[in-house]
Image (cartoon, rainbow, N blue to C red):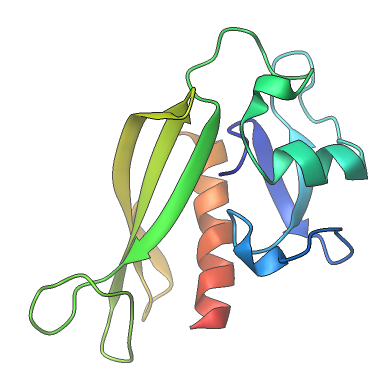
Length: 146
């Protein structure tokens, strides 16, 4: 789960995670904070590794006390030829990215975003630019693996 105030910009190649492929956005990312009072500030390497890429901002001093979400998680699903969800294959044209926004480890908002792989176009985007950018990062990593 990534921090909902994190705006990922580029892959973080020199992160200190034991299993970077297991990170919430598929790998480590560098970027800046969007939390009130810290907009556009670049977190330290330690903060990127401990909070931004791992979510649950309750321990981060930059996070506002009152917030809608503590973390955001993503997963991908796509219909197979029988209409079932199973991931992706060569026949798949539209991927569905499921997102869940959590507060205190409980889901408070969820939904689906859609991406047309063949034309590289988002068919359904998230209205929060931070969540949309995280979805783009997650999808980029996902497509390189699959």
